Image (cartoon, rainbow, N blue to C red; front, top):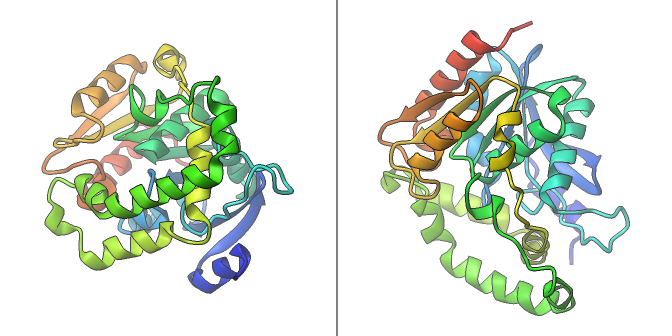
Length: 297
């Protein structure tokens, strides 16, 4: 069986790069030059591919870094017991984001996150305020889902011992429901082609992917982000699709109200993935935010 490093090299694109961080061999790509740095964080079950239609327009006025979050894409999938001590917790992922900013040669970055990527972007801004110059939160999970789910401490040891079994069960569930779930992120599902959906499936289902996702699940816990929103001290743009069924539009309205000085942009005819379903509107919103709220160097 091929090692994951061999799989990384096999499936990498010509512009793929890899860097060691937090016990992972992280797959990333870098576009554009100069300040500011924009780091794009995709949601669960997706990959770098989620930003395919917005990277180049954004790189015309900034350096853009995209990477596969742990458990997804071509970023390695080590077990916590492996050498290097990789951890899939939200806090460890925010540590990784801060480290990537440094390794890209920047002191600060604008973090743009979609769905659970928005959760990690917000958490990073709270934990590393000196590293974050601005926030763009698109359909960010803050009041539910990943940000509030928790594996009870009393049963976690048992679940860990039974990881091989439960990861196989999770594999069967995700495999069977994957296409339906991804299509549910879209308002107009006809815009998501079968080839793109198949590519996302391939991005996820590499190596021992279900075991890595199980480790990610085991590390979920309530982040209590709502209580910390008043502490966000950087310019923030909240984006929501008018027809987002995954993170209800009302939740994004609430998020914008609770973050001091936050702006809200509601994109019509759009679901949970504005960067994919309405890329031009997403670029317009982010570019306008940069021009108005972020000092460009």
